[in-house]
Image 1 (cartoon, rainbow, N blue to C red):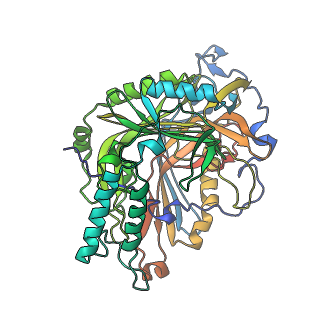
Image 2 (cartoon, rainbow, N blue to C red; image 1 turned 180 degrees about the horizontal axis):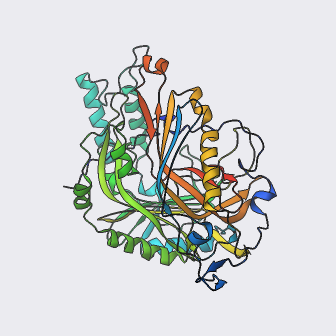
Image 3 (tube, helix red, strand yellow; image 1 turned 60 degrees about the vertical axis):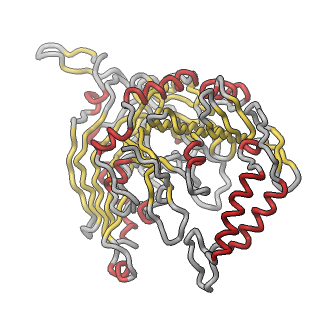
Amino acid sequence: MKRKTLALILGMMISTVLLTGCAETPEDSLVKMKGKEASEKNYEEAEIPETQANAEETVKADKATIRDMVGAPETYQSTVTDETGKLKIDTNAVVEIPEAEKASAIAVSQHPFDQAEIDLITNAFFKDAKIYTSSSYFSRTKQQVLKELTTWKGYLAEGNMDPNGWGKDENGNYNLDIYEVIENLEQEYETAPEERVLEEVKPQFGLETSDGMGGTYVMDDNFIGVAVTEDGTPFRYILKSSGSTPMSVKIENNKKYEQSEQADALFFWNSYDDFSANNDIHLAESLPTEEELKTDIGISFEEAKALADEKVAALQIPDMELADWEYGLCTYQVNSPENNDIHIHDTGYMLYYTRKLDGIPVTYTNSYGGALEDMDSEMETWDYERLNFYVTEDGIDQVEFINQYDIGEVKTERVNLKSFDEIMDIYEKMMLIQNADTLNYEDGRNYHIDRITFGYSRIYEPSTDSRSGVLVPVWDFFGNFEGMYTEEQKSQGAPETFGNYDKKCSHLTINAIDGSVIDRELGY
């Protein structure tokens, strides 16, 4: 039965889950390649390999696959530990390699986010929709404000000073000031219109809007509107261009907000697998089984993919294909300091699209890239290209589209690749090195790597060029880890263990050409 209880995901889950520390290491090419060498290196062209056709004849292997060339098995198993025995890397993984005959180094740059692109995106999703300014769409009439004001005054009359259950602070004062809420509503009532007047608008940058204090300002690098489709469905439509995301498009069905009893609820899509693997997530209702989930979704995977594929075609992005998908839960969280339970609002599919060039996809991970090396850095950074769809039986619920690439020249047609054995040697050494300092604040950590993939990733050098880079073949290592809290931490209330169960988290990325380690968060 479809759940319509709405909810906010557990913000950052447990902050320590995301701490995967890197040990101090020498300036070694294994750690990372910096400067122009990282994104402008002219990789050596590989010769077409030779292979033994039969006992008498050796021929050129024009049809040899990458798996053949690097000598990779279908599966790989190993276990390595550090000298203390407290850091363990357990690998029992499938080795996923596309059926391609070569890998290249390919230049990429930031696609212009100009009015022509905004118009194309608008037509792709909202060709026949009415688009309104957010200020006019979300404005409340006097009648709507009065209804809420009457409710709050009723609480006050009853002596209910904490109707939301937010509790008191350390000084005994209510976290919610009911008098302030009533005062704000009274002020809103004075300026609220008798009837809502919707103002149509063309999505663009540079529009003038109210600052909420009687003045106006120009939105030079953002647009916020609401698109109402022919069937009456409202979608939040947000365009931004700033910092590490010179192109950001977010589309979200607004119905769930309008139907929610929690006025300030936020909704997030989360992996079903992550929820089922993580016992620390507190759901208000029981998690459905995978079979129950399939029935609950109410739409087949093929139907969901067809809806997303149609929009991808309309966006006219070359070589963009579905790279991965998973079952998803749309959740919300009650806004209360004393209640952290997460509620399931809806179920559906999370579809991840990336480029696929000459049979090799850009590997999808949960990393956005574009991070800074330290908080004091003033470099301009660049997130990865990203196109995600979240689909329910009601259609596309949400879209995230970031930093579209322009695919440029092929810098090296057929790059030399390190052998699989060489890559595994680097992997096992670097997993121990990069996680060594976790033992400074944990009693131990066990990694379980169950998927090794070969695909493309973009690298760049932000200090020299923050809007262009190179797609290079890489190896990624996916799985999970369990960390053990120290006795001191447990004495202060910490549980025995914590973990990271995100199946889209790559725990190490290695350049398949030269064996250098790429920091997924930094993007190089």
